[in-house]
View 1 (spheres, helix red, strand yellow):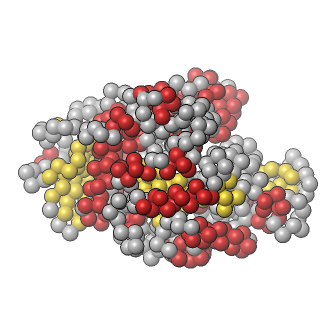
View 2 (view 1 turned 30 degrees about the horizontal axis):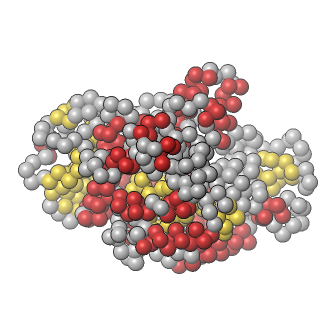
View 3 (view 1 turned 120 degrees about the vertical axis):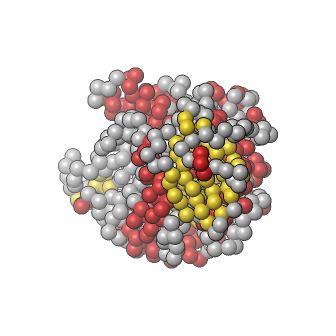
Length: 546
């Protein structure tokens, strides 16, 4: 069991949350797609790791145009994952393992196959028409020049009624009209239905875009955003002791304080992406690669730690289903894969906030660099490939960007063992397994005390043991050091000192004088840590004293 009393208010401050991308986690029936019964079969593994909650990427009914982020029925399970009975069983069984289920809800848009939209496009007088965002116009003359995130215009013509509907993402993902109180009431009723089924939290997809004003070219952080969120929270989340996290690409620290105010009027926390967007050229797309500005990375983490202290709450993450694997991105996924994967874990888990582990991160799973374009499945990846070819980019340059940044890097199947398809499925997997699965898998690590898995397990346990992890303040040390990320956290006489060499060269320890015989080494990524003056490649140490 996790050891967290979830009847306590804000239990999520001490929790560690594990994200599962269901179609890639574990397949129970051999159809090549992961499912709910597959997750059920791995609850012992997750309890052993020590996590407190599973964030489940979308499992609701969907045409799967955007891998489930296009929902056609919010109150049913997509048949590829199972059915409602399987979901109810997963909620109940997970609870027996001390694990809460956090559902991923997409409230900015629905699928164009949702019954609401099927009705909405029948006529302007249909009661569901105003559930979506429409504008008059003429075919071929768009209401304005807004672009969709996945390419093309954000407006789609519907000849039956002579209007355009607005979609920020795929053409099959029409935006919901949150200005309509009936839409909001439908959403609240649906969320309460899931709460009554035992769901203990929600991750809210692109939630900062619900208060859009397309006429004014406003998508994120619209004027009514926080009004809508306070109403949402009051009508749903505040009924129960839930964890809620909003995906907010446009959040800065001031906005994050509104979202995650300790008074609890909106959400527990948000995912912000300032640190994650640093390795691209300013003003360019994520595919336009640039070296990581390490001093800026330290400054960003320090600012979020300091400015939210006592006034909000941080989410802590390196990876998710939309991001490449951190060990391949900013670490070394070859010679120092184990060391750099552990370094990222130690650095992140020592910070204040709720850590999120993305499936396979605890094994040091890597990007896949063997894929050709026909091996990819992600809509964003395929659109980018086509668009950049048309713009004259070389195929070689495009593939370099995809191998670094494609979302499919995170979506290759979970690597359970060295058998065919990494033990993920007995069938043909929906997307190829990373060829390195025979070396990198659960069986190779779960009983190895020196494995990446063991490091994550230890860090999760430490968060429950020492109050300084949850409540300590933060001070960045050696801010101008270009190799080492080091900080100290202090609370009630406890001190946590974290020292991480972020790179693959041996370097001097800039805070060696702080390490003395009173410090207990809680966690490190090298078995011997005798010389406190020197840090080996990617070396990370976590010390404690009281």
